Amino acid sequence: MPCASLPTDGGSMHDHATDTFDVATLVPGFRPPPQPDPADASLPGAAARLAAADARMRHWRYPADGPLVPGSDRHADASCRMFRETFNPYRPAVLDWPVLAPAIRARIVALPIWDIAVQTEGKARLRMAAYAGTLDEPGMRDALALNAWEEQRHKEVLSRMAAAYGIELAPEPAPPLPRDREWAYLVTGYSECIDSFFAFGLFELARRSGLFPPALVDTFEPVMQEECRHILFFANWAAWHRARLPFRRRVRFEARVAAVWCFLAWERIGLARAVDPRGGAREPDNNFTLHGAQSVADDGIRLRDLVALCLEENDRRFAGYDERLLRPATMPRLARLVLRFVLRFVPRFVPRPSRPFGRRR
Ligand SMILES: [Fe+2]
Ligand SMILES: [Fe+2]
Image 1 (cartoon, protein in one colour):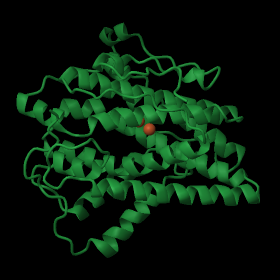
Image 2 (tube, helix red, strand yellow):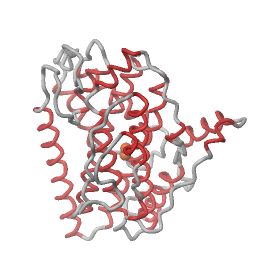
Image 3 (cartoon, rainbow, N blue to C red):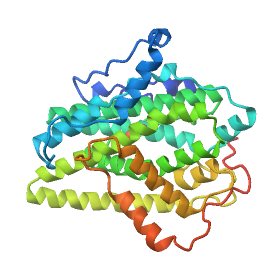
Image 4 (cartoon, rainbow, N blue to C red):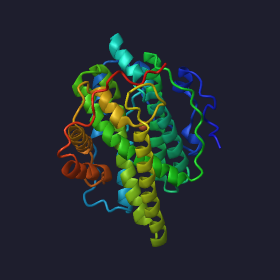
């Protein structure tokens, strides 16, 4: 059934930025975290406060010594405290959207990722809130509800950016409330692990290429780091959850996790096949990696260099968090394997697009 708190008719760019989703409808008692008054931005010391919040978001350590054994109360406490205490209170409504040169603006508008990006955030917030509502452990429930709220904020950031640059978003059907909430959360969580791994590298590639203005890259930097926190929390929730399950339920859970990975692999291979190699107009898809690399590096990039950059950025983004917390491991492991055995002799795999792709109209 559609979630009652979502708009049902898609509608305009304005609707995308201000839709009325409320995490508390699925997680009773959830309160949005306090955010600074927009007027504070003009007060003395505002820049220092922003910098401090940014640093807090990237560095965190559990105050007690000793191991964080997966499944233990300390492990749950550390995972939830990390998530809560690294919260960055930025407000999407006051983010600066720099004025872009016409060619750069056209390039950004033409990227075929905006619809799927906004819709993915919408789906993530719903699935996370839906699963959070089923959890009994208050710390985990609150952390996951906050995660859902942050996905809502990502959606707002993207929608406001679309409005600022004239990106026309497709009408968005209200995603249905998942019937199997654990499955939906697992799909979203592992999906974020895959997408964030590549997004970290692509984001750095965009920064280095200079094709996107530094001010715009800076505006998105907190969003990127938030995804790092999200998958850090997810990896620790999964380890905590599986360690507490009795044997039979544990076996069932592991089978579900394996099925989720198969589903995600199938989904991504299917999407890769759907790519139009001529780069012409097509339906939006979420093959961020291939399209992203083509879009952020004018001269193309060797696939092995891209994978190496993703690994490097993945390590850098996680480096500031307590090393006793678990990190998402599958994508980095796969990437190292691929670098070692598959891509040694592949010269170039992500080519320069033959023409600007993703024409929208
Ligand atoms: Fe997100
Ligand atoms: Fe996320």
